[in-house]
Image 1: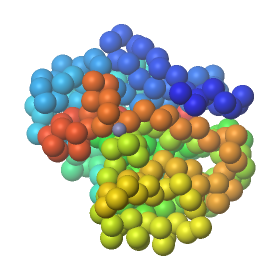
Image 2: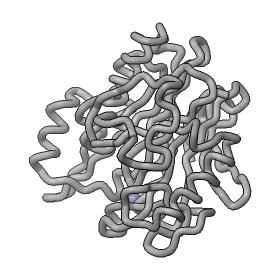
Image 3: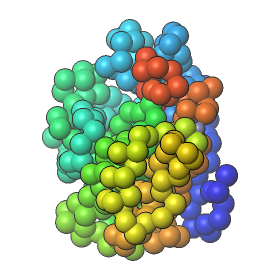
Amino acid sequence: MKNTDSSVMAWEWAKNGDIYYITVPGWSRQGVKIGFTSRSGGGSRSPYHQLNLGLHVGDEYDRVVANRKDVVAAFASSLNDMVCCQQVHGSEVILVDENMSGSGSEIYATALPGYDAMICDTPGLLLATFYADCFPVFFFDPVKRAVGLAHSGWKGVMGNIAVRTVQEMQQHFNSRPEDIQVLIGPGIQQCCFEIGSDLADRVRQEFSPSTNIIYSNGDAYRWNLPETIRQSLFQSGIREKNLISCDLCTSCRSDLFFSYRKEGGITGRMAAVIGLE
Ligand SMILES: [Zn+2]
């Protein structure tokens, strides 16, 4: 784990009841609710076992809502305070306020349509996005007291959704990039994310002159998504000391996480949540 090389920030596992999740204690101490769940806890059955939080993946509705209630309770929150976006693998960011509370928390169709990232400075709301291989990118500005959350799969990386989230925080909260702290959560790492040569060429072109992003071995190409996100964020002014990544691979660790690729597309979803107390 490379989470200890920063004196300022670190992530760690936490447990609340039987819910086992990744968190950032340094943010919690400053009044931020922050977590990324694992499969542990919950009542869903195979192939959604156990803590499936995705409403749109074919699991039994009542079990998913019960699982979601358990998760928000673990963060001393409720489904009325939870805000979800539809996650269309785009790169649009929305400013969330109290009028949107409860969006998508029990009915997928009411999730904020067309968005993959949310920013918020309203205490009491809990932003939530859902995952099975894509990367959650969490943002906290301790100076302006604002948070953000971006769902970034490869399409989101191509659309620079993490950088766009920072730009929206600058615009709406007057955040300075050098103050914003970032956690890139677990996702499908370079060990498992094989892509075709056409896409590899596009990535090299798009992110030139960044290096260590595409690895090739004969005809096979693998893309390091979190490294791509990191380098893009540094170019937008995020400081190295303010960015940490969790290098766990959701595809390698299907004991801990749901993986769309590893499990052939039929599986559950983890949740990323962030909000101000
Ligand atoms: Zn892997």
